[in-house]
Image (tube, rainbow, N blue to C red; front, side):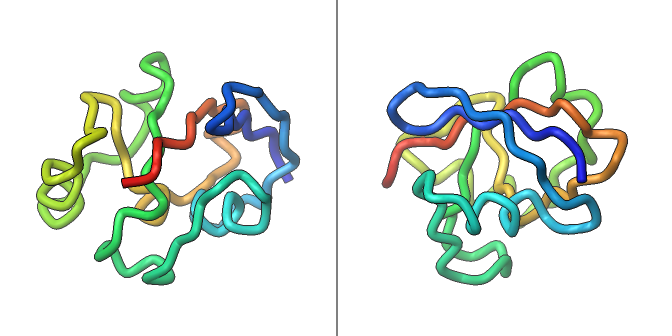
Length: 104
C-alpha cells in the first residue's frame, strides 16, 4: 500500500491507501469518486480520465499512441490528461496526486 492523493469532481482531496502493482484505475474504481472504468482497462472508453499533477508528469511512463489518440478526442483534454488504466501504481509513485476529470 502507498499513498495516492485523489481530488474528486467536487474538488475535495482524499488521501487513499492504494495498492501498488495495480493500475491507478483499479484503485480509483474501488472508491466512489466517479471513475467508471467501463472498458475494464482496455484503453477504449476514457471513463478513467484523470489529470496528473504537473510535478508528477515526468515520473510517469510515456503515453502510447492509442492513449494519446483517445485523449485528444475528449472535450476536457488538458496537457496533463492521462487514462488511469494505462498507469501502474508503483511504490515509486507514492504520493502521486491526480484529479478526476469531468464526465464526457
